[in-house]
Length: 349
Ligand SMILES: C[S@@+](CC[C@H](N)C(=O)[O-])C[C@H]1O[C@@H](n2cnc3c(N)ncnc32)[C@H](O)[C@@H]1O
Image 1 (cartoon, rainbow, N blue to C red):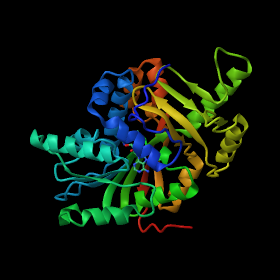
Image 2 (tube, protein in one colour):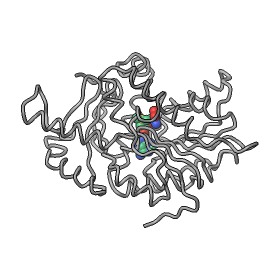
Image 3 (tube, rainbow, N blue to C red):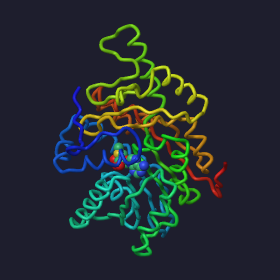
Image 4 (cartoon, helix red, strand yellow):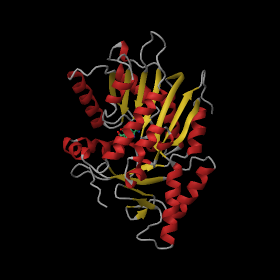
């Protein structure tokens, strides 16, 4: 299996932390890379993910009250503006979107795409503002408010109706505090009755495939390695070498996964690669129980809980069924959560 590392010449690979993730995603933003990506092996996966995100918006974004304006949507970890067309076709033209991403190059590319769509006169394009920000920083909203100060009144963000975070919450679970700060950022401006939609790597899938890798390695199936699994499109490695030492021992992974089952945060990282996309990027297991408990402390009531993509609807299942087996294995890594913010929710300790 060969993955192309998208780093800049001379870029040093680092192993954890937001800045590294930003550098990694910055490096994906050159035009050559884009051309390659459209033809890449993971194209079917992206098409399926896009259909799913569209469906989640269509299903869960509250319709405007009669005569009211379209929703205000915050997209945390928005990436390069790949969802512009979904917002244009699903939300109404008077909706407003704030996209936040830690990668400056991604934010620049999102603005470029928005400006291009405006120049092309695409109808119903909501007003979209893209700002750089760290979704797991306790100072996120201070910096958003500071950056938005110079913008018009319409570009202030005292309250939002919908928050989305797609394929990125697994960068936030390095510490209990970073997970908590992320959830606070996602919810503190969300109005009561508003929704939070989050697609993330499923703990259950990681757990199952980790166990299979250990069982296969124990009986010598092919080139199986305990703690690592994947196919021609993706690879997850819990026990990769980092500077001569293993990221985790197999025993440590098993112990942390057991703690997750008890609802603990128990930080657990792994390296993730997706062909022509990310290369050995560090992610953190988002334990389902801990996520739900922490979300409840922030006043979030689950509506859809860790649902596999094909479980979301017949349409989503049809999309998944069109994929190759390898593509399905990638798509089934992810699940969707949808929460509703409780009225008068107070953050509980
Ligand atoms: C896999 S991409 C997903 C992009 C987009 N949400 C989508 O669905 O296509 C993950 C994104 O998360 C961003 N990201 C990672 N950590 C972040 C953080 N702490 N704060 C804000 N953005 C972050 C990366 O820069 C990258 O753009």
